[in-house]
Length: 317
Image 1: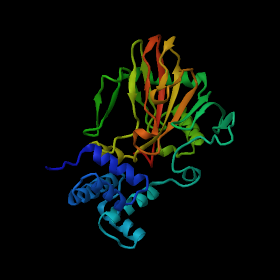
Image 2: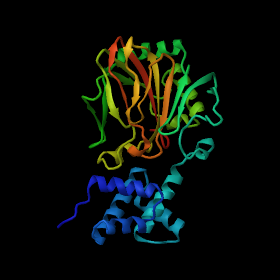
Image 3: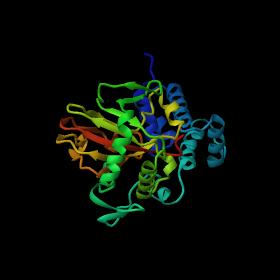
């Protein structure tokens, strides 16, 4: 009977590698599950090589980095060494690196407020897994109104990333209208981006442009993940622009009369859309185990406006 290297198998291999498992242990686990050795080795080598290319490493860099790390070992050992080396190479310096190469507000010691540079921001709730921090007063009312006014003339039906190609598509799961600002294109946008960077200890240039969305009555965004599926064909082209997404900031610009909360269904948690507040969450790997499945509940009355900032591994271009 022929054995097929499926999307699920490739996803599992990447997860094991990022968790620190050696290629030998992954190979043995596959063989113990009935995989033929030659097919298992091929699956390991091709999956991890594709994964590394998606992180912006050339085949030559993969081999060179792995040899310097492992003393010139070959085969799957070379590929596995490059996984660790590639993650180190993509890591930012400074406080973010000390936090495990993730954007994150410093909530150690349970502070009631955080320094965001030009203002203090309240900490309203903290969850360890998924890593969620609810923030009060991230934006002023004037900043919320300014973003809405700037965005309104440019709204169009929201699109989502098309993982099969790396392009965009209309998606029935998302029924909002939206637009993107270029990073720093307006003084209000630049000020908010600098505040977020200070708050989560992550470079401004590692952020995508802020997206503003309007949800009218009945509009919603069904539960989804923000990271890019490593097994999707379009992911390598998407992550060339700045690596994987690692964190999300959702800012509430206008409150609906009812509905419209941000829900995390795996943990039965909902953040209500209070104007000026925000919710931050991070994901240390592109995997459902992060618990970051989330969605926007249907708006029942009125309009909800939000601004979303996605944070990448490295400079977003």
